[in-house]
Image (cartoon, rainbow, N blue to C red):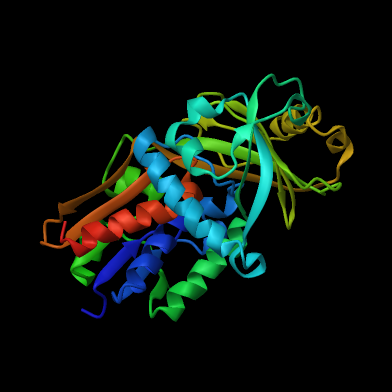
Length: 319
């Protein structure tokens, strides 16, 4: 066998896991059905903040580890896609955020003038905001530099991967619904609108964990990402014009100039939600070790490094 580890899945979870393993001197090959620009990760807004990812305490620990890594990568934003940006999370209090709030330096209650759109509470923080397409390309380069190999290849089964290497790491996201199979994995559809940025440099989010309609404004190098939706069980990836118009209407009270901002692009992605992230080992029928790392919902980049390191520990320990 040429590879010690086959990582199945080439989104942010798969690539981060593969980089972590390759940089610990493992011979790693990634099997990705799609190029990175076609993955769900490439559509994501990229804010480092736990959202629709469970269990809460473990997710906070994974998120804080990723916060540390992405903060370091933010020193080279053009290369890595990560920047540190200040913003407001409306509709929440620091006391409600548990260990996440305790671990983010400078997180504090928002002042009234920092709460646009009629919101009565919120917190302010400086956190990583990631241009996902730049970040995914960076991860691919970093994997190659560590000796890893990326193949555009769809796995028919985990057993197929297990016949190619003694260790398989399953990072297939929504694909785990069929590949494992795991019926607990289901889509949460997200639609966003990219508009020209009229000069906004702070992020804003108002998004309850169970709300189907959310409001967020994320300044990115490619434009301003406006969101969004969180529709559980919806599989359609076609942008809906009425939904797009509603997104702009929700964001306009936050920044009135957005009502007339020129639309650049529409994006739709399917978050791979599961009631609890699955990071655990099992033996495949042929004897190979399979470490599962999927079900990260709307928190992929937020938990990516923490989950990658936990998966790598399971690989190192033989399960």
